Image 1 (cartoon, helix red, strand yellow):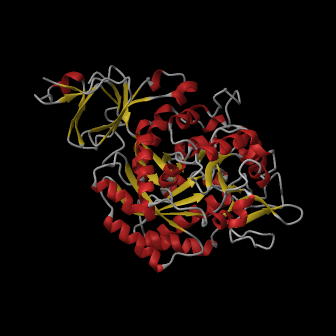
Image 2 (tube, helix red, strand yellow; image 1 turned 90 degrees about the horizontal axis):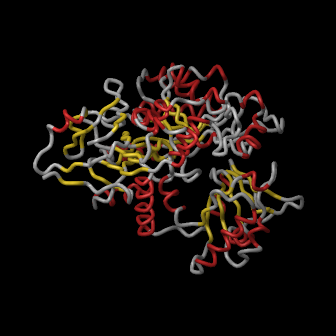
Image 3 (tube, one colour; image 1 turned 45 degrees about the vertical axis):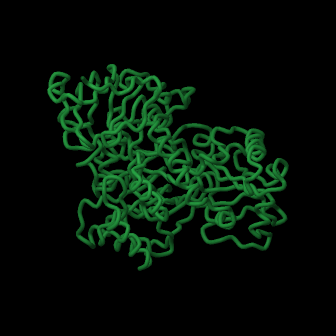
Length: 541
């Protein structure tokens, strides 16, 4: 009650109150209308005039990995090698029992325009234990000499398929690894016990609820732990809903993988956990020149990126999955990879005569102008992570330099896809960037740094309105998971997944949105997070 409710329901955009029974919304309307639903034991939440929205969905996340990262060295926001070294040293000293020092979050500009990290920087602070640190985007990693030695990486170790061991002039490994080369070390790192994973998941759910998240779409790394998610569900500990994808590695789709995916779909298909969706990766990232491009990179014309799949085998896999009614997420960053994904989805629909399958492309950092309208025409969902377009040194320096001025004008084309009929679904890619969606909301609105740079915004014509941004985190996100009839807006009959915000988004300066705090998060009619300043739920007498 006493709320300003933005429902994301086009037929009733605004309301003052909402009535909830059990897990679902009973009615939405004026304070007077909803007052009639009060009973002797009705619990009333006084929103104190604050803005209420549907709970947010993060449409692209690596939840298990992110939850575990919460327990490791946090390198996010570190701006120098010295700062990274301080954090690694402090963590190592605080955790003498840890056999490996693991972390994530370093960025490419830290090491200069074209440089990558070197093992010597880590050897000097932790010489006696292996150190293994992933870049913020998960596509490069950094190891010290101890980690390289434990993995048996020498000058004679060949580069793995779809990966690269960076070497110095003498052919020795420098400690920097790209793409699948990080598996050479990762397989030697200690694996968390089920109990440690459960503890991490609980922490991850709490953090998610604190930021206003009610559902996440896993884009890899969670499928093999479905039993742990199910254990939390059986113990009634879930406070977050999960849509969990099977990660399909190239070079092909195998029969035993199809059975695993089908089994997950049969087993998990309720409001809390759903399977039966597939994620795969076509290419890498622009910063490492591994995103597949139609034309050579502007800063290095000898490079054109790398397609992780043989195009014919990828199309064959997509057609088979589509035939079975399985939704597909494809990571495609370069314009060539985006085109291949669109071609594959179009071919599958034509071959199978399927409709409304809602295949998705994840990231879409660059795109050919002629492919923009194909999202709407083909019914392909555009799954973006707004904070990836944050115009910091990495984006304006390395990313824009690598793709060149002409292609940079089609960077993260949110508005262009939405205005040509495509559906936007927003997420974070946590732990690549923060789990907190509000910096992403701000960047969708401004495409400027928190300092206001660049003054006009980075490719400002691709900004989206506040209404469209909210929709991409709510109803668009629900559509992207085939759940728009059950969630994504505040209307009668839908799940009671709501958030109360500390400030009114519609009255707030867009440059202040990143600082938004959530006062209360409700999932399935239950309050799962309440900020200290939010009054406790009052019971009507």
